[in-house]
Image (cartoon, rainbow, N blue to C red; front, side, top):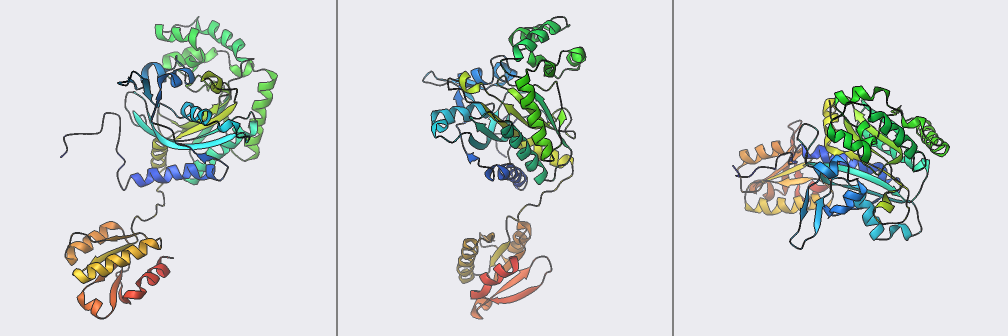
Length: 420
């Protein structure tokens, strides 16, 4: 047994379980590819200031959860705790917004890192698929992303998730609400850390999950009552477009999400079968983020969907994904000549798109057939000296047990026909 183990709060993806994660990632990516989103990949670490400015210096992510370090050369870096700031930084650096085709539509998939108390559904290393539409202020974009996420979840068979929707206003109306909320919060019985948030970012107090805090927030002023006419009209159009697409949602006036950069539309996907870690994805509009990190004004919207929690949601609903077989054909050679011939046939099968594997290590028939069973292959090809002398191999159907001889030169075509 190895001396080393995976770090606390992390996990290894190992077959066959890892196939579920790949299937979830693909389900998230499929509707994005069909909607004009191009793939982007960014480094696993960035300048620490990118997240301090973009995510927000008062957020738990930056103050408590970020893995920050200094390199030998004195650079201050951080493992990425989320994807939006990195993707926007990369788009600005590559001048994608100057290509004349706005919005710039990008999707990504990767691992993210936060120092948190590990528990089921909350890890220090986790996987997300995200999408960003950069450079356009249009309610149809907000609606598009919500609809695409709904489509992705439903393609997996999930039913028991809900979409929560809210508007956080903009730079015109939010300051008025912010002042009213601060006045309300200062009259509550809150601990010192929470009181500090009142001055820095009072909306973050609304996101506090502690029951003792939530009870006191029952009478808090709601942002929807302070929205300016432009934000009200924008939000109403988002709601109408989502409704017209047949996507159900719930208005949640207390939904603020955990990052400083959100404006106007904000949304969250929650699954009721996951306990306290119920959010399986979320996102919103972030019209001022580009300027926060030194770019031009580029109104944008995006989301990130959690792969880990979606797998847990599938398990909670008892959904077994239909995963493609890792091996359709398994070859068992008996003798050196058969080893050479069958290896050539396995290579040919693979070139023709058929998943095929081979009995390595010179095992006898009994041991090789055990491997064939474990592989999950639908068919096994067996050949020995006598078979090859007659110009055939034995084709065994592993479901029915039926075994028939097939010509060596016809075996590939026969398997292509049987496997469709």
